[in-house]
Image (cartoon, rainbow, N blue to C red; front, side, top):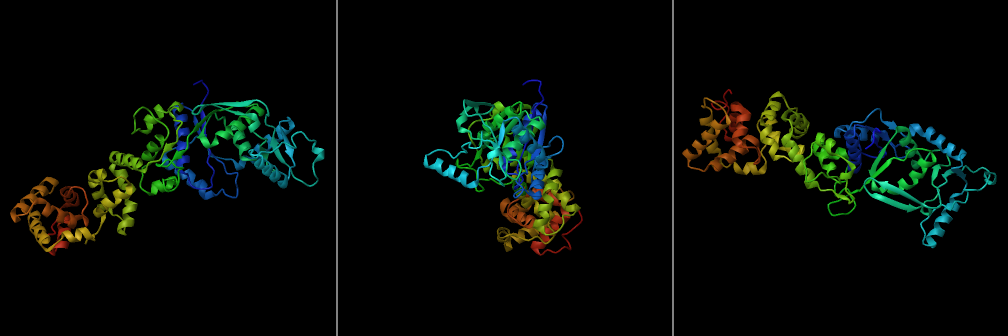
Length: 479
């Protein structure tokens, strides 16, 4: 690395949400800039006015912020710079490096058909390349084409793909300005990268063919060619092109499905980049380690199971208060009412028991919803089946012992349950499972004695009274 300040950019088109593949490209650019102490820019490539929407711009910005990928300076609108791009094309015409082309749509279609008939790729044949503009047909607005070199070859020393070469006779004279005077993507990208001082272009390898054409534009504009790094695309777990059935969704979908941003960052980092055998990599560690040498040439495979596993790890590591804030809106949707301070307090105290059992925030909310429910609890089918007449009798016996306890904690409740189970002549599970059903409304929860401790004496006895018919009178005592 030289003393040159590294500048990278992420340049999405606002025609939809921030795709998971685009998020990985953004992450790699962000990490490389942060690793090198450089700058990372966000550029919205909104020149396609028919498909670009403000809603998509907002979704991209929101997705980037959720992922924690901050950018330097203001986000740049490519459309706002269209005059700058057009001016550059006119300078190229003046320098003899571009020219107006008056070929009609019918002529272009005839070229394509002739090429197909000869088994050649369809390319513009350069018919207006050296013609006198005085021969132009009247009333026809021309496009502006770049004069690409016809001899020799173009070589790119790609930081990921290695040395790649194309013979220049494979490159035709691309359009820089459309007939209505608007710049094309190929021109706009190069001008913007030059003006933003971009030193490294890190993007998907589906753009590799563009890099050859863009290299010639840099030369024609007397600008330094950036380092290209074309990363392989993401495939599904079956090796096929990534689609929605594999997980090719917008970042907002993963947020809604209950993934933490640090888990998504970690997972995307490992899609096509590696550092030894490291799997769980913190953001600080990623910034320290990230370099382009760690990018592989083979397509990465998207595996939802691995993402879930990472997410489960980060949920276990997350601050309980942060998790409570994250799941309360989800729980409110489940229980159909606001979660009050008591419910929040129970969730906070019970979070250490909930975290190891959840792979997503959706699961965490479903597991913890019973802490925030009001009485009487709804019972699912499995819980209802556990509460037989005999089981309710055992719970009534347990309630009579619990109400008299001088102390209330997990260990005391545990010991009391064991003593009651022994006194009524049943195994602990025969009592503990109906107890779980009564206190949670389900058959899956953290340790039930922990649950009773978190709920407190009053709520525990009240929930037991609801299923035993014991009433609130002698059982539902103060905490």
